[in-house]
Length: 252
Image 1 (tube, helix red, strand yellow):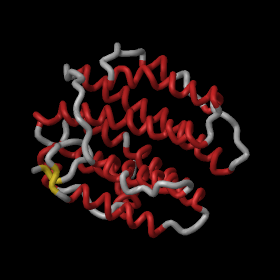
Image 2 (cartoon, one colour; image 1 turned 135 degrees about the horizontal axis):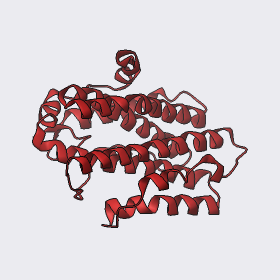
Image 3 (cartoon, helix red, strand yellow; image 1 turned 135 degrees about the vertical axis):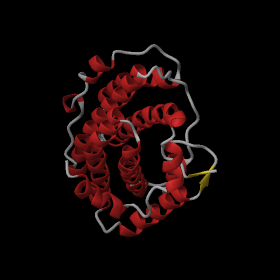
């Protein structure tokens, strides 16, 4: 895989790199359980976000319920102390065939992009869980970072511009994940390094899918909103942060 070529558009899209202070803390072995646990939850939240977009904007009643039921075992495990489900069996049951058909060009694109994203994010969820089990790292619930909530708090409150803003936020979250995987990988053991580098291609594509959908739905130039959220995102990444998480800012 040509990592520099893959990362170049991601680095150009983001308004700042991950601060060295974050990398320095993240590379310390005692922080690995926290990072893996937060990474696990981030993958689930990314899938939840994609599911919400399908349910709100294009799904009919039956497919919306199917999505809720399909994701519930993951949510029960992560948020409600539920039993650990058979992640492999669950993964095989989701496909675009259970989604509604739509005459809307962007609606169909949203279904196609988001179903693929859900499947990939939950595959990553399962991969992180396997790593945690292999290393005897227990799953412990933790508070979320300020990152995604702060980004989304800046979205406009009426449609369709709210959807456009949410998609732009999604693009930045995916791009930052990609950049952070690449920044952290060289400081990890061989197995983890290989795993994190394996995630780069899908994360890089996810940010592009979100951005393309935002442009398609807006039907106009959105560079002003992209720049606005880029500045908000960079401020969150480069400013002091009292909580240390996968998407947190400079450790205090």
